[in-house]
Length: 359
Ligand SMILES: Cc1cc2nc3c(=O)[nH]c(=O)nc-3n(C[C@H](O)[C@H](O)[C@H](O)COP(=O)(O)O)c2cc1C
Image (cartoon, rainbow, N blue to C red; front, side, top):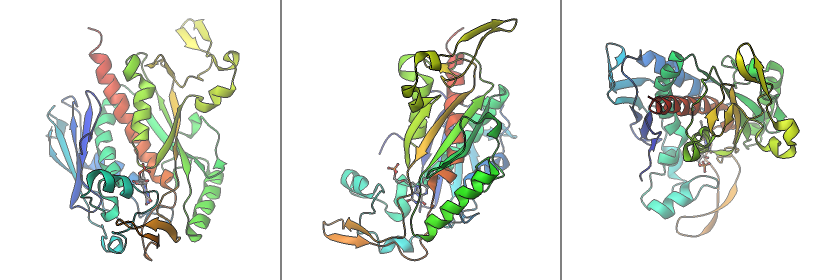
């Protein structure tokens, strides 16, 4: 199972399974001299961790990072940074009765066909537990971005059919909301919907919006490394992500050129844009305007309803998750810090690539 590495110059290589002893990440390409501590990483991990509210899975992981290499005296040395996070609250007993059945919506079927020998506990390698390692790595990426005052924010924009306006520049900071939705009233409506869905034994989809600002002009490489293509790849490899758009995205297909074009303005500060429908990227390269986009997440596949399925040896059966199974009723909530993390990783990589472009 190759392809555990993401990025070109700033790269992350994650490893580990949901119910193994630990997961981790190796970060390569980070410049020497960045201030990094385990506390910095733990603050970011807390944001992604489950078990804090009724809106997320009841698995309670302390998520404490251990830096094993690449940091000396609180600063990166330029060597590979290796980070380990222990799995302390994996309950494999719940998976015992399910191990011979294919769970609808999960990766069980494709992993079984492709790899034959599969760690089925908690989804094994396919589990979103892996995204904790991405969040840990993104702390290093963010340190690079901070040197350039670049900010990355994500928020829960939609749950089912309840949505807030978009793009929502003033709503960048939503960290104090239980579900990362920056509009308090809409958040309460979303929360009500999520609880009702959970009580009904079901799950619900959602959309995460991201917003990056203070970008220099010129990040992103042409043709195959266009910045929006890198962002799309980063977002669509988050478990359960099903759609990606940048700028006006799919809405652009309903517009005329006269409505969608971002006209140029010349003033004493130089060239600027009258609007930002492109989402801050033209020809795959940053314009200097904010980058914004959305990622759609499907409803969690684990639901407390009896579903039709087939056993691994081919018998038609039903599957019912055991009482007390722990899962997210709305994956999109916990995907917010992961979307933020993947934005940071893509932009840090783009920044380092841009530096290698022009002498
Ligand atoms: C942060 C996060 C948490 C998730 N939690 C759950 C969960 O509790 N239950 C579930 O069925 N899927 C959950 N998922 C999604 C599954 O991991 C994913 O649907 C599954 O591995 C199959 O992959 P795919 O949907 O990308 O095809 C979560 C995804 C993310 C990003």
